[in-house]
Amino acid sequence: DGGITQSPKYLFRKEGQNVTLSCEQNLNHDAMYWYRQDPGQGLRLIYYSQIVNDFQKGDIAEGYSVSREKKESFPLTVTSAQKNPTAFYLCASSTGANSQETQYFGPGTRLLVL
Amino acid sequence: GNSVTQMEGPVTLSEEAFLTINCTYTATGYPSLFWYVQYPGEGLQLLLKATKADDKGSNKGFEATYRKETTSFHLEKGSVQVSDSAVYFCALRNDRGSTLGRLYFGRGTQLTVWP
Image 1: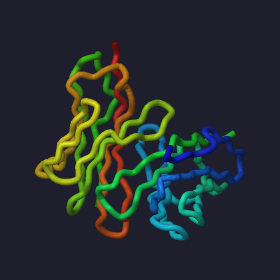
Image 2: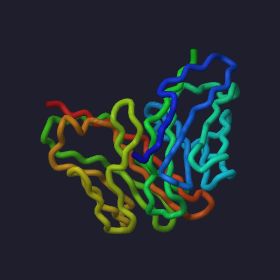
Image 3: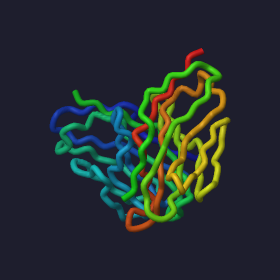
Image 4: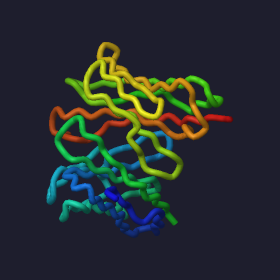
């Protein structure tokens, strides 16, 4: 089955610690995205990548970093600079530069601060 | 710029009631419009979409019509079921400028349907 996988489902972070959220897709999609979801605020874009080895900041990139070394993988690192990381993180992908294309979402990772 | 405003929830209905969730947008040019649904603890699933003015998207009894004159894309269902309880997100995609491919989301509307 084709789709997007995110791991882990739950992640706990200690103060001052960097943590990495995994996102893998086998849909052969060029574009991948990371969103943060907070209650009552909808989804906000953190980073996105339209092609391997290239990515752009979204609306709330501070305190986060990404890499795109492989087409199928787009890991997100939440650094210690992100002071309020508790949220639900969603990864998505799409085929690319066509405004009619749908974005497909993974099941999400819930990050909690200890 | 691009933005989406949708009706604030929560919305609580009895089974078989009529549902409307309002969504309006701001965008230059001709965006594509989407409704996504999120069940508890899960990611988002595409519910329906429309890519040009006057198009009607439909799926699982839900419908929405792309109205350019009122910049709206309201979600409707004639008879809701308990299984429709979820959070619904309106979104637009506008490929003008450098933000190619990204979606702009509304804040989401929580729907609860009681038997």
